[in-house]
Length: 164
Image (cartoon, helix red, strand yellow):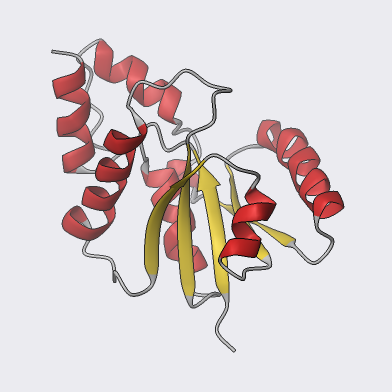
């Protein structure tokens, strides 16, 4: 039986930390649904359409990932509803540092209460990616800093255009 996992996030923009989680996940599941949240809870730099295009370009153009193993979608529902829609009982979450754990632990617990068939798998980023966050990348990009170590070429281009 094929295992599909949901990897939800805002991806505003995608980073090498996110990509690290995707690469590691492909070793343990057959397919990943990258779910880009379009919730009203956050203020985004990029629109949902822009974020979807940025993620697709990063994964399939810059990094040449297999399109048969990764699907990029948008959603504005509970992640557990997304799991139901795609017949998945796995939610993927990345951890960078201990500071992420408390929030992620609460989120996993809530998802488990909403659907006790769902398991959350936490994957640690490689040490070189643990300092990377979308928020910090946006700050460095806005100030014309070098972000080549943090995200893909097409994502950098999208950030440059946004801050021109």
